[in-house]
Image (cartoon, rainbow, N blue to C red):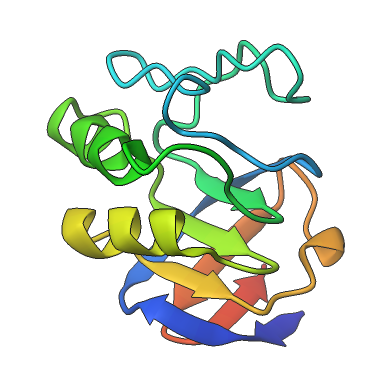
Amino acid sequence: MDLKGRVINKGKAYGEALVTKDPISFYGGVDPESGVITDKDNSLNGQSISGKILVFPYGKGSTVAPYTIYQLVKNGKAPLAMINRDVETIVAVGCIISDIPAVDQIDVTKIKSGDKVKVEGNKVTIV
């Protein structure tokens, strides 16, 4: 199944989807050293986003979030790509400065955790 959206940061990625219906706060909600979600209100609490295609509706929280996303990359714990329903500025900036492929305007309810997903430009393919 192909889904078309809007490119936030172009690139290609292929991997296993990790999906939450909850927004993600990267600053304080994701440990940049381990890549584990630490937000107790998020359905992914305790799970690692490292090496996954991270699918979530939108980000929330502090303007420090882009730096946290950058730290994830530097620590080798970043997701392979991010897919959003509605990206907001802090996640967009984090993906751009960290060179993580990102797409929004995607119906994220069509993707389930464990799905194999390919991100290429504005196209998201569930394999």
